[in-house]
Image (cartoon, rainbow, N blue to C red):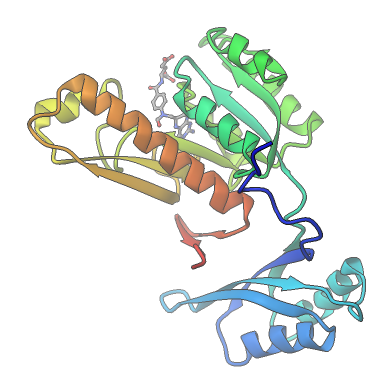
Length: 298
Ligand SMILES: Nc1nc2c(c(=O)[nH]1)N[C@@H](CN(C=O)c1ccc(C(=O)N[C@@H](CCC(=O)O)C(=O)O)cc1)CN2
């Protein structure tokens, strides 16, 4: 059997991810590093960012517990005390070994869904897909072939609220932490978008701000663009206006026919969405106002 290059080596030490943010100031990194060192924890990655405009500080630390380290829940409760003190920190310690429970929403286009499921299969995306929800039946066979639950929720002007309530039930009953709009072609209501704030990622078929609405690549052809792109962003009530997580661009020129632009567009969408989902799952993304801080690592 060919070795899976993505597979983690057996007995890889357990790593935890600390995400924290607070008012910028002196000694924050030192305080966190000292806290971890005093508990015999080894910091194997640390990234931080100071937003001068809002005097806000953000950090992502990856650390390993060692033989003499307290249990992780003990570390969490002890860190709560530190964070509640002078630092006044918002924080969370994640166990990256836990697959992120995810609901994927699709309409008729299959390229992003297919790409995400492949990357899940090869271990690139540590997510467990609890359901695929669609307003069309086109992709049911490919989803059920993967052994994943397919939920058909056709949307009309009259049943939109009911179907959105059903979607929220699916998210809650499956414990989904993430919703991915993988070319889902219905606009989520303000209420649903707000309920899913910071945990719903959409792929937009252009380099935002760009060509809105139908046939963006034909609009690109008519406009004679030299670059085409795709944008993965968190969903907000404002269509295509959510915090951008990742963008992918490809240089094109006058030789590209519309169908070729569509093909390049599909690849861009898959790459931008997969990268954004990976950053989210690896706890590399902070939302700050209507923007993101993404600790991409080395
Ligand atoms: N609240 C939000 N919902 C959605 C967003 C978003 O940014 N905020 N993004 C869209 C995806 N999308 C572009 O990326 C998009 C999808 C659909 C439409 C649209 O006009 N849809 C029509 C119906 C079309 C159809 O049935 O095929 C509509 O909803 O009336 C625009 C942009 C996903 N949802």
